[in-house]
Image 1 (cartoon, rainbow, N blue to C red):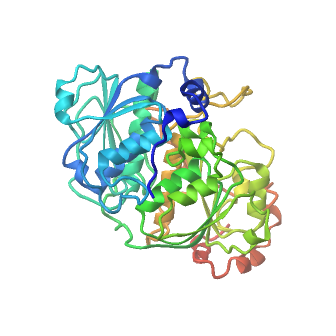
Image 2 (spheres, one colour):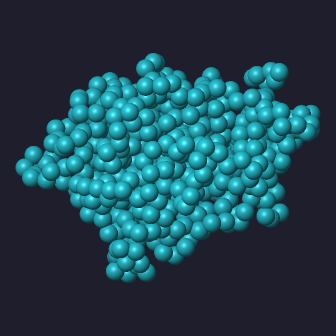
Image 3 (tube, one colour):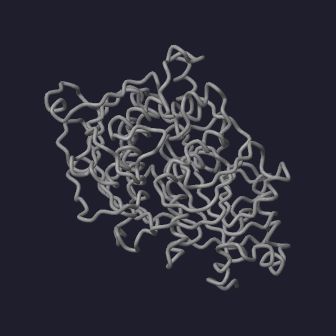
Length: 484
């Protein structure tokens, strides 16, 4: 069985109704609808199309572009996918797979595969192009990306320096696609220069967006990633983006997916795996997510809130991924005294990556003090095209950026991979990565301290906590850092 794009006429929603719902929160970013139907081109250099890195960049870029733009040409060769990139529910050729994924999320858009010769002869005036490597294209604005391993490069309107190595690691390439699509989107909505960088690099191992060492083939990407039991609480925009990456990773273990919510049309602007049929049928998010995970990973689903059943109590996780957006859910998770927690959230136009080693690092409630609303982890938000003033009250719904939550899910996948590399951890317990900037200022990265007023840490019995997480896969991380 493969996933097939639906006949638009068979859907219980019109084209107008679909875009009203899907683009509602993206529309709040800008007063212009230019980003929706401006002709854009995605292209890949022939040599890049034959390896894992190039194919991951191509597919991720395509699915993200289709979540906000309805007029995309793809200059991709229709060549067989590498086994690490292929998925049993989707076509096995690059261009066909890309167009299929785009049409699954938007059956009304115009997503067209074109040959390189057609581009040269075309009279289409592309508003913007995103290229992987340096294929020859003509467009008003050109964003180029390249990647290998954990490393990514992005340039604007000039040639990009490629990598001479190859790697099976999909994290850097997928992140490169997110950054590239972010720059394309920012160009289309006319962001000011202080929000549009020229050239920059990103290292997904150390989570640095600045000049410095780029990790490509070292440290070596694990042949097997043994995670034990992973408990994903929340299969929303970030959780579903994590699941988009899982089939590309050699993961061994069990995933439990917990979320009471169903897929809605508004989710389709920022989730790479939910499709229009999921929204039309109001499919539970855990079931939509389970479908995308390959057979190599065991899956259990709970279509209910966290802590709602005895069956959930039977789960003994080795890692918890708290991708939730309510004080009560966070409190329920933290008071269950979880083992290692890895978490990515979105705050306006930035991604926040957090690690919670029990006892050592600040806990989940230190990061999200109950009752405080200044930090908004639920989804990627932006207020009318500029970073909101924290002293101003927000009114109405938040805007949602199509690429920020996906970047968060990809970096969460990267954090899971890193647990199986000897030198782990590679970054402080809190790192922020801002997308609406020119990267001229250093981004926050530090080991977050325990909050003296935290309702959990203030009364936590460390001895009991150690006993409860005994024999979990990563319990020895407690001894990496001495608590002051």
